Each structure stands twice: as C-alpha cells, then as structure tokens.
Image 1: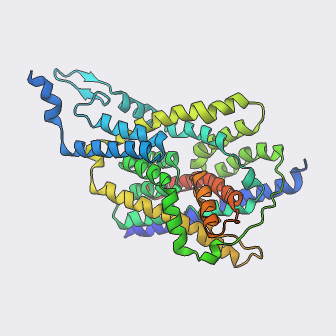
Image 2: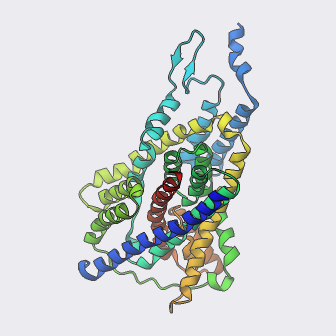
Image 3: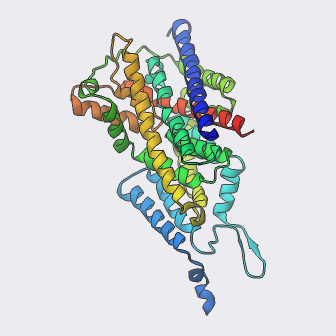
Length: 39
Length: 379
C-alpha cells in the first residue's frame, strides 16, 4: 500500500516536473525566436 | 570421454527456453525487421550466455582455475560500472535528430511531455503487482520508449530485471506500428482523426540551432540533475551536428559510433538474460506492463491534444499528441499513415515529427525525474 501511494506521488511530481521543464524550454525558444532569431 | 557430456549434463530446461527466446528474437529481427540492430545481437547473446558452463561468463573450472568471460566483462565495464554504453549511444542519437520541425512549431513540445504519462501509469501498475519501488520504477521506464534510457535507469536503480526491461523496451519500440493505432483508435473519433492542420513553420536560424542544445542541457541540468548524463550527451551529439564545422565527426557519430555501440550494447545486455533470472513469471508480467506503458503513453499524448483543443481556435489533430513518444521517426510515420487512411489529403507529418523529437527530449528528462524521485523515497 505504501508503495502504491509513493507511486502516485511520483506520478504527480514526475509529470509536473516534466511539464515545468518543457515549459521553461518553450519559454527559452520563444524568447530566442522573439529577440535572437533575425536571419 | 564422459567429459564431452559435461555441458549436456549441466543443461537446464530454463536454458532451453532461453534458446527459444533467442531464436524468436533473431527471427523477429531478420524476418520481421523489428529493431534488428538490437534484437539480433540480444537474441544471439541470449543463446551464448545460456550455454552450460559458457565461456562468455566468468567461470571457475575444475581445479579452482578462474576464467573471465567476455560478455560478463563487457557488462561490468560498459553498463554496470559507468553506464557508458547507453550514454555514449546518445551522442549518435543526438547527431541524428533534426530539431528544426520542433523549433519552428514550439507548441509541439507539450506533446513530448504528455506522452510520458505511460511511464508513471506503469510504475503505479507495477507497484500494484507487488514489485519493489526500484523495480517498479525501472519497469515503468519502459514507457520512455527509449532503449538506452530504460537500460540506464534500471541499472542506476539496481533493478534485477534489466534484461526483461531491455527486451520489452526494444520489442515494443519495434511494435509501435501495431500498438499506437490500437491505442489512438480507443480514444479518438473518425472526425477527430480527419482534422487538417496548417503547416506554416517559422524559419529557424543557425544561431538558434546551435544555442538550443546548450540551453536545453543547462535548463535540464538545473531542474533534473540526474538527467544530465542523458540530456548532455544527446545534446552534445546534436551540437556536433548543428555547429557546421564538424561534418565528419557528425557523420561518424551518426553511423560508425552508433553502429558500434548498438552492436556491443545488444550482446552485452544479454548478460542479464541468463535463464535463472529471465525465465520467471515476473518477466511475463513485465512484458505486459511494458505494453500497458506504451498504450498509456499514446493515450496521454492524445488526451492532452484533445484538452488543448478545448481552448484553441485552430484545432490540433489529436493523433499528433500520440507522436510525443520517443520512438523516432517511427511514431510520426505511423501517425501520418493513420491520417492518410482517414483522409488521403491530410498531411500532418511535420507536426508529428515535431512532437516526436520533443518526445526524445522529454523521455530523457523523465528518466532523470524518475531517478531523482525514486532515490528520494529509497532513503
């Protein structure tokens, strides 16, 4: 039972962590496109 | 002359099962063209390590003389001690990836994240089956749809199922053309699968292509430090490709390095396919959970696209979300084929390719996340 609760916590934290990381990368790409992509 | 029968006398029925497993893997590689570069060496290796008193494993001979086996040595040095083989393979993978379709359409980044859901759903299912946390997490990472990541994570977490996990990861990657259409049809309507998407890519400058791998390495390094080996080597390979001054090195990474490591990785991983470890009910359960992980990955990506469609004026074909898994470029091709089956004029390949390469990045981030989180709970 303990492992199942831990797995649920890993699911929530893991998915949140991946989305946050991806959103930061997207923000960087957007900023680069906005200010540094003039060729 | 009875010494000639020593091998035969030591034979177990589990080893005979492993010969059959090896032959099936070789058959899948040759006849069905399923990931032949990995499944063929693994299949042959499965036979090698399961021959009684096999010389490819460390043995103590009569008279107390110890011998070193080449496959056991390769495993010890190339995987157990440093995870060098799967990590080095990422240089080649990075050199093969063109992030252009993703950089020109950054919204596709999100599907790489959404399609990692299967990892965590599989960890939960493995826990329900009673696997220990480190084994459950290692089994779940099959859902990364990325062989080297699966091997690396299960090795770092000291899972005893690394052989079954590698076989499941590579087998299901090869079965993407069967697994994904099934999963997508479960959660989409015909009308949704017919949605057309405009493709108006913004241009991607050379500067952007060079800065991107460096920036991703730094960002991921801060957020998920355990991913650095994976992301770092993936992005190192990509930087070699995009810098424009290392053409021959890029070619070497894409071809010679990748082939050499893949060849050795396949036969090395067979060390963990010894009969006493592999022929168990757990292996069958792991194969089932692996299939579940791939299905849930696809469903996770598709449902994210459907959720986004609630807010978007220009609708996304939800199948593109399913391409957010790491199996590149197979997944994007499967999605395009499905789109054309519904409507021969529907071209969504570039969107799917963007989601697919995002899956490459997201799967290694997921690998690092799983290691970070699981090790916290193992304290």
